Image (tube, rainbow, N blue to C red; front, side):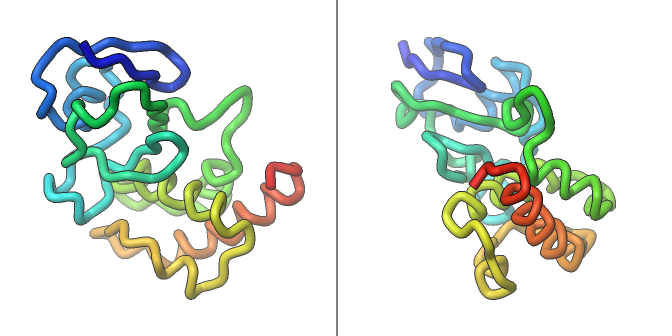
Length: 154
């Protein structure tokens, strides 16, 4: 039995411990905001937070998650949107939207590590966007940093 916490809720999993976290989230926890993109941890569509850090969930086995805290896009906002989510809306980032949950989760992690990232820091994000919305993503991350400072989140 694997015990973990997903979006603040205690959960138990008594299945195949080699199952990737992505499939647990989608098929067992019914949290479908996290997307399957490549299955080899390269594209970032499946990015979630494990104990506060961004990870690619498509290759992370459930066996590695005992006692861990998982946050998905569904659990990111509290009573109001997270600053990154708000900036994504303000900057009209998504085109098709498929990669955006993973992009947002990666951006949140970046802003925790670097509250005022420049282009060089933002370029360290390796999440892929097939629609090429990178200029809007960059602009939204900078906007989120401003919003977070204004709201005292950093």
